[in-house]
Length: 303
Image (cartoon, rainbow, N blue to C red; front, side, top):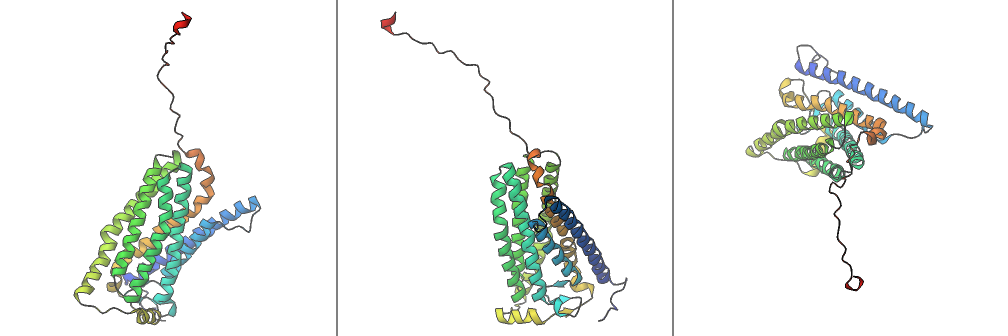
């Protein structure tokens, strides 16, 4: 294995090293969270039960750690290491499982919040999350099989739309809670606003420009069978900053902040039983008008 590129003068080596460091911290945080859940399960004497949100977080955190160790750009077929594990077939499969797990976390947490707050908006958005992200995954697979960046445009547009809807749902929930829960929901909504802004101004336009460039150059795309063979057997090792330059921003945010969000969603299970005490109670409306006396007319025969 060629390791000459692992030098402080190579920005790709510095970037890859930072991904490894962040992933190590993320896995350690996952283990600490699992230990915290283990303590709760022993207290309840239900040690065979696995908390769904923790299991989903494990799929996402470990999937992102794998992709940090062996980063790749799917459509371009570029990677850092010459190993079959760097193939797009392996990497995209891991990413699909991880991303569906992440989406399921959001759906579970948002539905639970909507149920406590009696918010139909939150519950309806929660039900739409997984179908939208499943469609996004189909678009992603179309892109990596055919090498058509239009699939990435659609994929990331669907992610943007999904989190825009989640942000709307959270904004409706903010006024229905108080205290630390209200602060946490507001912080999540602010983070999502930043994500949506990044996707709309940086990520989606990047893929759109690549698609337009390919259209202008009359690029030939793979068919299904040829594309599946190519993504399973071809990977191009490169340690130059040029091919990686546009990938660094989204990968860095993806393998750090998105993973932290997954860990926090998993921790929701530890505090969800406290939600009712932080829900804003709507006071009953009391009548303010005084009762009006209604005169009673006597019958003529009783005068």
